[in-house]
Length: 485
Image 1: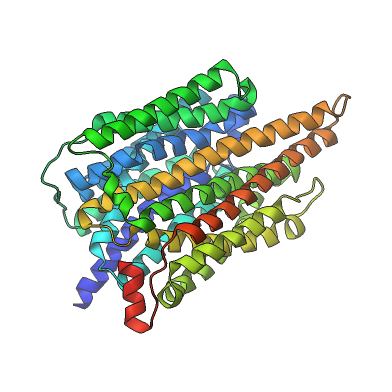
Image 2: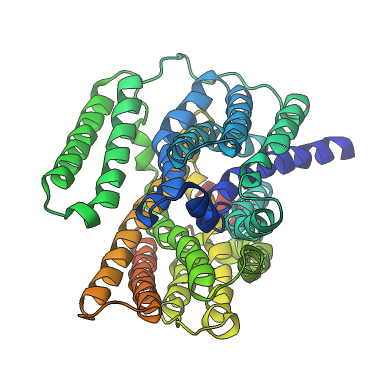
């Protein structure tokens, strides 16, 4: 029995390691961006695509990956996705140009879209509903939120001492180890569905719609919000989204059976997730640029400045499962985004002549607590009460909300930040000095952080209005209510 229990939790370690690698790759390149920009002589407007190409492909294909896991087997798809991720990472590290690097980042995102929902659905079917699953999901949520923060630290060390290409090479041995461990430890899973028909028209239309939407948001600040190209991309995105909805309502085996949205907390948790990550993803992007380009930090010093985040996330993650057991997830999801809102509002006051203790540390302490509490609670809310045969779909929906929210958030906030900085320089009516340029850049960061604050407040409001709070009585009944909703 002890051996079985140990094996049970070793599976979680393997799956969490894969998820850590997937989340890590969103943020690990942030610290390396100045080095990559210098290596390939890239414009700053193109630089964000190294992050966005990954998150966009990741988010765009997640629904397809989640449904494929349900139809063709979770373990099989997880192993295939991990293998592709390792291969794409290897080629990423060898990329000769910035354009090729961006394309390969998209390939990594596609592989991650196969891995992540399959891994989470394995967690959902491996651990029984109740405190056991909540504990497993707490580990999962801590890894998901901590991986982003740890990525900045690891990226800084690797970039400074090994070179930026090793940010990608590091994935290769990890991917090999995960595939080998999965083959040995994770039970094979056969589809619980009575068919294996994958809704390709639905998959193609929703993926294309999301990609066109984000591309339009990224390009709008430079081309203009009412320009022909922006309106064309937005119009095409809306038409494809309309086709997707029409297709899903008429096909026999849809990619997204809309009846899953009848589970109220699935819908509410996904709507809450999007604005949260819209604000958080951009934080890593902007703070990484602020510490290096404005404060003059080295990559390692930048990475070390993020170290407080995983520490605070760990503190929150340790206590949240017990708190969920006592009061449920709704109160936590009403309050935790307010912590991150406070953090972003504090960061909206960073100074040109700032320092870590005054300008960053207090914000990061608040943010870590908010992130740890939010991601764990929202994972429990979004996956409770979902039938086993749709666990991959539920996982894919949650990850889609996370990645698309992050991609859209980064596109919007980068555009607003760039526009605000440009207006600041224009209003000088003189040739900008080095100090004026830095002041303009920081002014752009202020605008981005303030809008991010609004995203967090919106998430708290959504959670308050839409999430259904299970009745919490005491002891086992409370635990059951949280898990079963």
